[in-house]
Image (tube, rainbow, N blue to C red; front, top):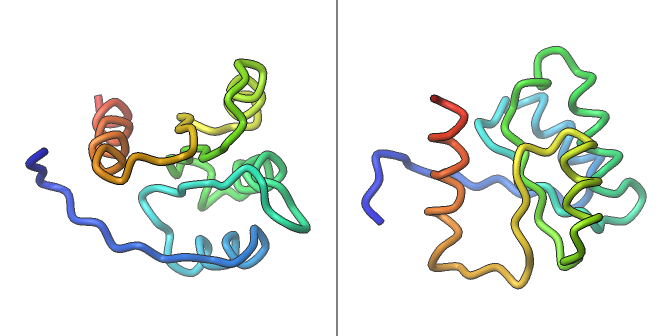
Length: 105
C-alpha cells in the first residue's frame, strides 16, 4: 500500500516506561500491548487518557485475546482501535494508516 505516511518506531519495555516515552515524544500513534507486566494495557490506556497533553493520541490495542468482550474492554478503556495477534506484518502498516485516516476525517 503506497502511503504518504512515514513511521518512526519507538519501543518501551513496559507501560510505565511507555507512558514516560509518550510524554517525552508525543507520538501520533501508540500501539498498546494489552498484556504487560506491572501495568496492563487497559490500565495504561486509561492513565494516558487522563494526561492532558496525551489524551488525544491515537491508541490501538494489540492483543492475543480474540474474544469480543476483550475488544469491548479495550475500547471502553480508551483505545481507538483493536488489532489481534498474531500480527500480519504485511497488513499492519495499512491497518495503522486506516486508523489514522479515519481519525483525520
